[in-house]
Length: 85
Image (cartoon, rainbow, N blue to C red; front, top):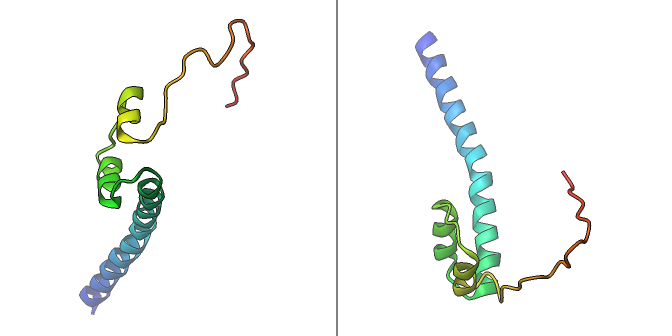
């Protein structure tokens, strides 16, 4: 009887873990869908880049379609910057 209860506890924990893992997976899918639609890539390509933790340089971001252009000097010299943390 104790063994059966232990197995039930394990099954319940596995089910709880599965449910908790569904949330981030759904979030990734939704974010990837929005990005893919905006830049004309497949959702699968975006999901792969996200899961691979792909980091792009500014030029690579332009080539990938995430950024339209790179501008230099948007903030004038001497302007006070305030950091929000």
